[in-house]
Length: 236
Image (tube, rainbow, N blue to C red; front, top):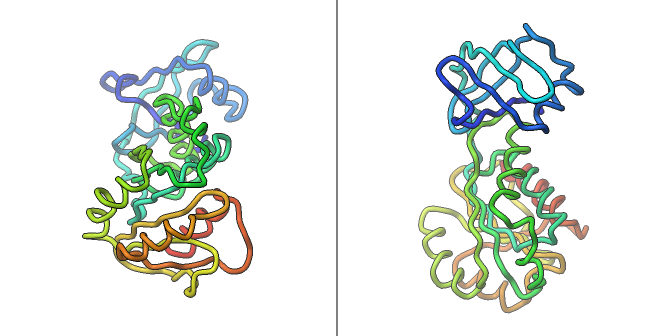
């Protein structure tokens, strides 16, 4: 936890109090914080800065807020469209892409996505929020990504993708594409990443027909969480 992320409901005037066990345990056991210490905090959706710890016990930590005038890091200019991964991989991927600065995420159903994945507890609002917060705390950011669930490929193709591509360059990551992933590009991107096993040929055909460009990361077949991280690192 490189940033103590405060929910607006935890802030009253110049003071902030948190009572959840996870952050209190982290303060005590990882930061080894003591009353009087100055720590980095951020207000969810707002600025970051320093706060002085004035109370710490088993159930509560209280801070005096000081100079919250630091802006969060800039977001990546990308809308990530990710075929819904298996639940454990979803949790890690959400944390990774949030830490890297992705602010718009669409989780998409494709042919090779198991229908049972959509029943996972990891898709509950509170679980998604938890993983996003962990990503923000890791990277010292305060701006939560938006996450949209899209359970139909054809509705996405016909209704959402055309709107996304009006102001974005569409890139589809898929093994066997002719062109390698571009590097250090400018402008807004819609990045589409398939499931384990990739998009089926019909899906690739339709995405290319819609105006997306196919690209690859080389001959290696990567796990989704690894591929997404590598793609974002190369693109930006």
